[in-house]
Image 1 (cartoon, rainbow, N blue to C red):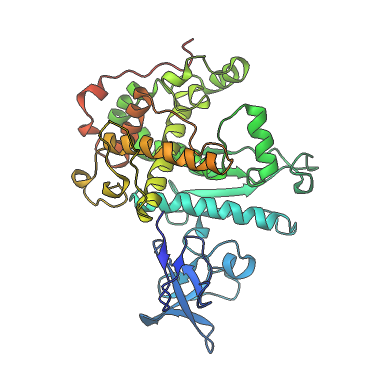
Image 2 (cartoon, helix red, strand yellow; image 1 turned 60 degrees about the horizontal axis):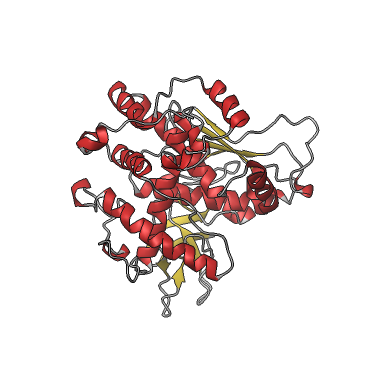
Length: 396
C-alpha cells in the first residue's frame, strides 16, 4: 500500500485511511478513481467539494463517510450524476455493499468501520493489479457484492445467538461475499482463532480469501484449458466439497501438511487451497509495496544467498507490462528475506510473528500459478512448473 501527501506547506503524509490532514486540517478523501488519497476544499455556498487543481469538477462525501465516518470515499458528481433527494451518493468501494450491519445497534458502527477498512484495502490491491472489478449494478451476472451482518449479540462479543436470526456464515457464493460482523470484533475473532488452532486469522485475510474464490470463477472456471491446468497444481476440485469438509473437521490436516500447503485449511479441498494461496499472494504484494513505499530494505546481513532488495523490485502493481516485472521467483525470494525482518521487528515489540508461514517449493509453485493467472500469462509458466503435480488434500 502506498502513502500519499497533502498539498499544504508541510507536505504532510496521508495514509490510505486518512480523513483529514493533521497539519492543515483540510478534509482528505479517497478519489472515486480509487487510487489517490488527497485534500479537498469545500465550496460553502454549494456544499460541494473540489480539488484545488481543478475546481470545476465537484465532489461529495460518500453517504457512509458523511453520516457514519466508516469510509473516506469521495464521489465525483460529474460521473456519478445528480443525486436525488432519496438517493445516497456512494463511493467506489461502498457501491459493492449489498447488505450493511443493523445500524440501529450503535455498537455495530465501529465494527462496520473495521470491515470497510479491510474491504477497501483488499479492493485497492485488486484494482492496482488491473483485475476485473465490477459491482452487481455494473455487471448483474458476474459482479461482486458484499453482505456484512451477524447472527449473534455484539454486547457479549458475539457469544449469544440472536432470536429469530438465521445463522450467518462467512463465505462466497457466485460473486456474493458474506463476512460475519463478529470477525471485526477482536475478542470474538481471537476466541475463534484459538478454538480452530489457527496461527493467523485477520479480517483482511477473510476478505482476500473469499475474493480468491470469486476470482477462481472469473479467471479459471470459465476456461476448460485453464481449469485443467489449475488441477495439476491444486488438485481435482471436482472432489465432493461437503465430504472433504466433514473429513477435515473430523481428522484435521495431515501431519506433513507444511510440505505442500500454505495453511492447514488449504488441505481441506482444492478450492480452499486456491483461496488460501490467493490470499497470501495479495498479502505479499501489498506488504512489499508498503515496504518499497517507505524505502525499507530487504537485505539480511550475513545472508549469502543473492537477494534483490525491496526497493529494486518492479512489483506487479507497478509494471504495466508483464515482461518488465521482476520475476515471481525473485519477488518470493525477497519476501522471505523481508519476512524475517518483519517477524523480528514484531518480536522486539513483544508481538507474535507477522508472517508465521514457510514457503516451500510446492507452495511457491502454486503462488507462481496465481501470479501468472492474474496476468493471463499461464502460457508462460516455466516448463518445470507445468509438470509439477499437486498433492491430494486427503493424502496421509
